[in-house]
Amino acid sequence: MKKYFLITAALLFGISVFGQENYKTLSKEEKDKTYPGGEFYKVKTYPQKFKTKKPKNVILMIGDGMGVSHVFAAMTANGGHLFLENFKHTGFSKTQSADNFITDSAAGGTALSSGVKANNGSIGLNADTIPEKTLLEEAEEKGLATGLVSTSAITHATPASFISHQNSRGSYEDIAADFLKNDIEVFIGGGYKHFTQRKDGRNLVDELKAKGYTVEQDLGKIAQVKKGKLAGLTDFEHNGRLDDRKDLLPTGTKTALNILKTDKDGFFIMVEGSQIDWGSHQNNTVFIVEEMLDFDKAIGEALEFAANDGKTLIVVTADHETGAMGILDGDIKTGMVRGGFSTGDHTAVMVPVFAYGPGAENFSGIMDNTEIHEKIENLLLKK
Image (cartoon, rainbow, N blue to C red):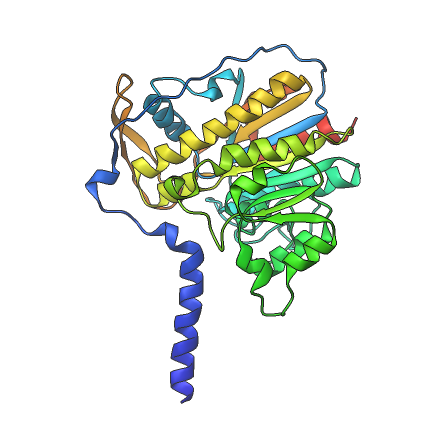
């Protein structure tokens, strides 16, 4: 009986982990290596003149796993142009973690959120496992509005690193509980189960409602919220691929910005294109291109807001590169891209940094990932 119990427990644990990490299954299908091309979307050019020298608002956008090849694959797939071309100040970020030459998303996210090198797997903690304040928490202390938007579960490593402090990125229920310790105005992503089906018996959705949040699961209803506090929990666990989740990321970005702009003191928001990383883990060019184009459309929503506002800085970067992606063939006229990969995991190469808006000139050149935090902190929170 004891042996049977141990086997059952191991299987259940494995199923739970697989549910969170099944995006790492390597694709061996040849059809996944080549994006055949598709309908192009129009890219708008935005003005480079701004109303202030320092930003009132900051939008940090993280393409999880995004390297230079990912960007150019998407550029080719959209006929040679992306919204990213509006970003005239560019640089590169070094991504090593405290305990590993190759970072994971938890340590990479923590470096961006808290400005410290962290150990792989830990959330919002420094290398000595001591909690470090995040940009989101600092912004709240300064009276700014805050937000998080992600195509993964909102409790996953990257968004979690901006609002939580945990030894393990897998402590999803503890991460969900950390959302109740903060006054974040809006968060949109999956992970409904971590708020409702919990070992401690708490129903965090009820607690969020008691704190004044509108809690919605349907994207159409989420998009209708214009003010107040919003918890958009768009899937039971992770959101699906693009065909399933539709325009969650662009719509979620636009919705969050419309809510946050009502705060006269300004805001900080992190928006993550999570599944660029997942397509890269799978060595799936089609998956990558779909996610990159979706991320770029969300960047377009951020640009539309920032250009009209004139006081908003947008920083686009990655926590690390995934897949060691190369581009083996392509056709800008048709949008066809064929990718090649040398690993199904993360790599140690530098990742791109793009900036638009007041203060964008500070993000040129080669920098450490912790410096991105420092630059945003100095521009937004130390006036």
